[in-house]
Amino acid sequence: MPTTPRALLLDFGGVIVEDTRRASWARELAETVHTLLAATDAQPPAVAEIETDLAAGLNAYGYWGDGVARSFAPTELRHEQLWADFVAADWAPAAREVVLAHATTLTYRLGEVRQDWRVRPGMVELLADAAARGILLAVVSNTIYGSVHRDFLERTGLADRFAVQVYSDEAGVRKPNPELILRTTRALSVSPHEVWFVGDTRSRDVRCGRRAGVGTTVLMRSERTLIDPATPVEPDLEVADPVSLHALLTAS
Image: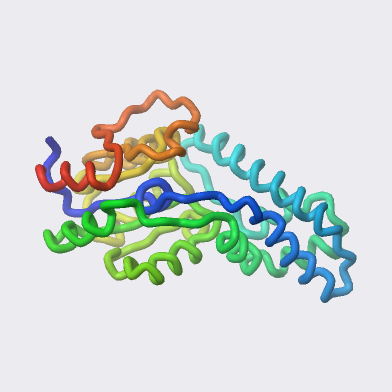
């Protein structure tokens, strides 16, 4: 059994929270984009066309993420890249310029409407016990809208549990780039070998933990674990949920 860590680094989606994709997200965001474009001199595409491009663009972004997980040090897309290259590539130049100018605001809106998050059962208790034992806590997550994650943790009263939150769109790098973890350990003033890193994918999280040299890499199973591209790396520990992770932490 690994020794008690000085810090516990947690992925957001699949570890801290589980999510449900909203069926209406593309339509809601398409209406926001259409309203924005209609208020300018840009000729907006029809709402249905915007909706189609949003769904296709985010699907392509997912495939892109799978692809760059093969490289050692992938960077994250800027908000402007997401909109210019993945969503609005075929729009009229004037419309593309408008969404580029509002890329961060639109990306935040994307995070608001795309899914519903629920804190995983047992996570609140795990965080409280870890904090009581003096274990530092941090979020380390790939996401294109980190500020939405921050706001969710504020609303749920969990933000103060974390000494550091590191998100790929803010850092400019994404897992499995080890820099995302190393940046977190530097901020916490701990060595990578003194931490447990918990994620729900092998291709991004386990691989990132290995590259960063963390003391213990933990795979927590989620729906994303099942669809993750096959990757020949294995975690030190595998758990079903936060309750199981809490039990391991208590026994360490």
